[in-house]
Amino acid sequence: MSYLLQFVRRPHSAAPHAPQALVDEYLRLNRPGFYGDAYVRVYVDDTPGFVLEIADCTKAINLEFSVDSAELRENSLFKIDTLIGALQRFRNGLAAEVELAEHAE
Image (cartoon, rainbow, N blue to C red; front, side, top):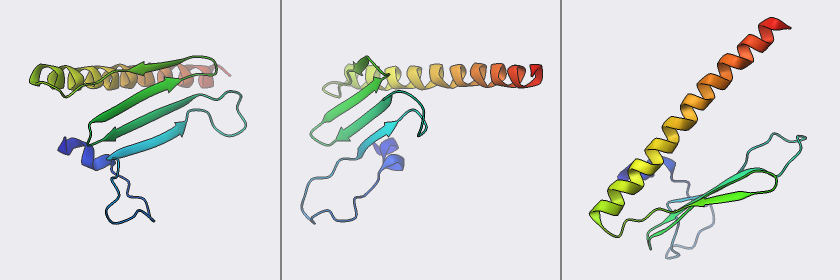
């Protein structure tokens, strides 16, 4: 799980012996002033506990990940890598459409 260390954010006032999550973030997906309560919630701790929840204004999905066996660990990494790749391709396509729309104006 060393690849997760790049995402670690240490709380400023954590007690010295309090368990800390490796990743613990709640991020709004819309800029301030835009309609909706879309968010992504990511949480990874060493128990192991995993949360990946993505929500738009009305619905949320929770993706399951497990590290209980070698096969499940491999599948969990495959799942997140596939999702990251799909999101990057979607972003590239969206950026191309934004550029076309801006030239059309």
